[in-house]
Image (cartoon, rainbow, N blue to C red):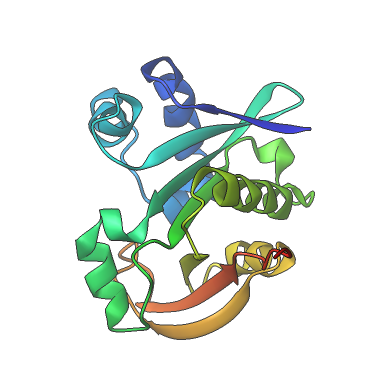
Length: 182
């Protein structure tokens, strides 16, 4: 069973290990020093930024990370996306990683994404959609989104996380399900 808890500063050593894993480092391109992880994850862990960092627990064991925010909370990213497609400011976005290499390639990614989308509908009742840009070369990531029910709605140039990557990104979207009722 997948469960969640918010990342705390006590999790930073685990995040450092995961960010250094080759399968993560290739796409996240993140500094792994203690100072860099504290700089980049600390403000969210302390509630100083509106984003949310969630530790993914599988049967109680940490296996991954999901970052979630609303596009409107980061106007600079919303503006960059406007060059590719219009995104509602209340829409959410997620970024994700499976840190434990033993957990990759087993279908866990789509399960994590589906579970976070369901949680998003609950946690953010006014969010109409989850919109996720993915560098085109990261096939495993965009395939996980597709398996989780996302649809590719656009493609265009955005700044990649890793400077070795091309600027081409695919943009995926899943809309809040319609509710029945009067």
